[in-house]
Amino acid sequence: MSPFLPTASFNANATQRPDDIVRQGQPSTIGTASVTVTQPLLNAAAIPLFAQARQNLEAQKAQTVDDKRLLAFDVTRAFFAALSADAVLIAAQRKLDTSTANLADARARADAQLASTTTRPAR
Image 1 (cartoon, helix red, strand yellow):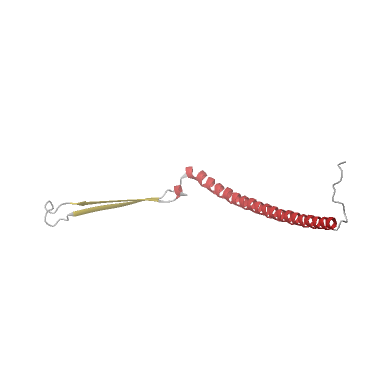
Image 2 (image 1 turned 90 degrees about the vertical axis):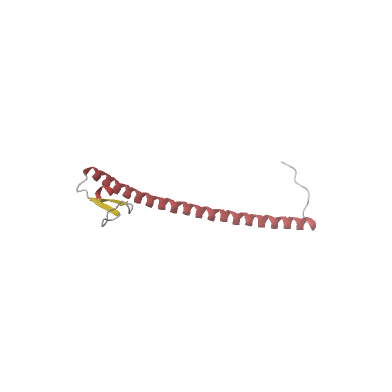
């Protein structure tokens, strides 16, 4: 955009002379200032740059949409991984509870001498 915008240049200068050098009735301080404003009418070389900047903006918008989509996908995958890990934990806890109950039943049978406590021979 800057090749299409006006430019301004400001210059100022101040000179102060000692009072003993200045003649009667003349100012001891003299200042000058100038302002220059330039507005390009047509900068043909900048037109492709303007089109490129517009294309870069559209590309960045598309990249932002894609980044949001990828982020949503990653969040969803992490959520389902957490749900799956929770289900595995619940299943393992049930298996532990069942095994603990089976061990308690086996010990109760062994204590009541309803079952043999010897091990089976290997096959």
